[in-house]
Image (cartoon, rainbow, N blue to C red; front, side):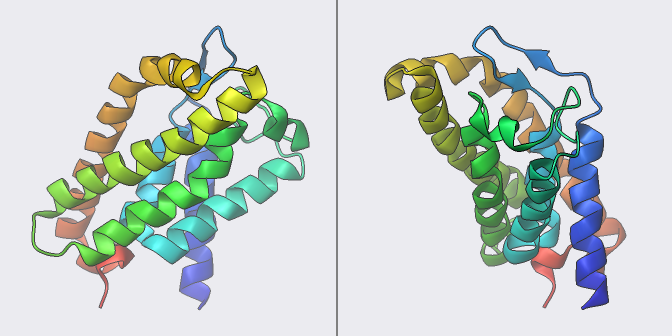
Length: 182
């Protein structure tokens, strides 16, 4: 129990630390950050439940006002911006990513974690993000979808990094990858 709580807090801190990487804010108000890599790693390393809880803890800390989002943003106002859909999708993205790693056992970890990051960490996150952007920017889903094309190359790179890091951790310390623990 204590180990789970510590790991959930540790990965929430990882997402916060990735917010220190300077953001690049696009003209429509959604920043490119490294924090989505942390969300992917929450799922691939901690698994579905613990990964989602870690992201929920991070978002709770943001909601109470801690400036943990890239650029030092925090507070409830962060959930009323064009990036709100992405933020709300993070726990679901971590859950789906973790669920895929937990259930897909027949392939090498690099491939499984990378594909899980693409499906959960990009596909699910984009679904929420596009819906949020369409609502907040008063655009159609197609218009909002076209805006996120700027994120695609970087997010595929993050998914590959998540796959390689998870695989390396699984080789070095197999018991540390809780998404694959028995």
